[in-house]
Length: 205
Image (cartoon, rainbow, N blue to C red; front, side, top):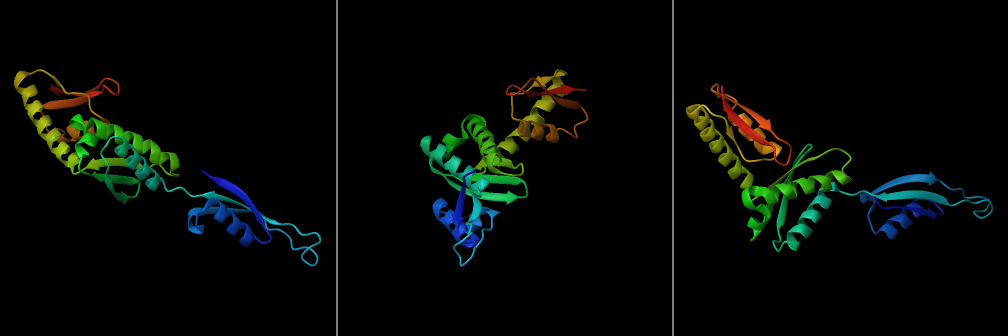
């Protein structure tokens, strides 16, 4: 966090000096008064300047957006970003002509970007924020694909009497599989292995 100490004849002047040096407005500043100062006799003798500390308040969501803009530009796929925040849940929706580059095979690039964006946003946030990255409704389509996959492999496990191992997936995708098969009394699901190779096993009961 960028912070400076400034002085002035009054607290107001000291704050104005600090804001000018930081090139920010007061609504983006965190101000603490170190010394209110003293006018002294005739405003000269025994006077003491006011001292303030002013810090720049960094918006974690804006920092995350900047990170995504820089990375996407470097990848040759510039984007526009819409943000939807609900409490501690922050969803970034990306769109652009070359959005497929940011999605990657089976969403692997998007998942990596989501992980890095979560690190960036929580570096600046006072409270932990959970990030979801989506690109032109990819997550919705992927969720549907995972549900169909889960149902098909569960049927295979029941018919063959053998357990079926799925490919490694991030935790939220594994949760989709577990949830999709929760009501199926003929099979059980559990996770195996360590990240990034952790995967789901579908086994007949």
